[in-house]
Image (cartoon, rainbow, N blue to C red):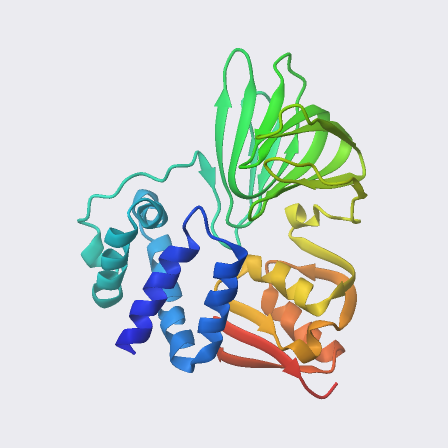
Length: 307
């Protein structure tokens, strides 16, 4: 178990680095599924994080930033925490969380900004605000936001790792992915400009969505119905694959949530409550020919089974 705990700590740090890739997520899930002790170790780490969330905000929030900024020191610190618990770590000197506003996994946050604009932060999201006499800039560090702009002479933009989105009196969502940014417009329009290709500009109108990288803008597509239902705590799916539903649902709960290849392609439609993922899983088991295998509450896999 000691080895599994050490590996869990290392995975925690790797998954919270700013450059984490989809391949790293896949490798972590393979590690988690390989041995029941891995799932138990991860559950213990998640339990620790829940306890830290109950500590004073400056203390609990700093853990993630420490992991990002000082990987080696964070591994040692978190490994120590797994042994001594919350009380023993409060004497450490930790840097403040480097984000103006943030949410934890499974949390959403509604904000009214100084200019009257409204901002909704989805699960596991971080943003910084830069409002001055010339501009209103929202820097999306990770996660997803929904922006409803207020009238103001200053332009309002959202900056992601891949570029900027200029609001043209609008309501729109921006999601930071791994190497790409997705923009969905609900009202009026936006202009998208990639960071490494400033001459490229594309306008997206209400009801349209696009994905862009640092040097290229993808094509426009019709936006999915109720794509920002997450802001109301709902996930609306129409003819989605089961593995896609689980991938989206897993963003709102800690640990591993996946399925076997045999059931990954099952299709479903419906409206699900993001704040009650256990009820969603129970509904899937009732409506599909699957059963749910659990090693811990943090390791759940859907497998083929009786209807």
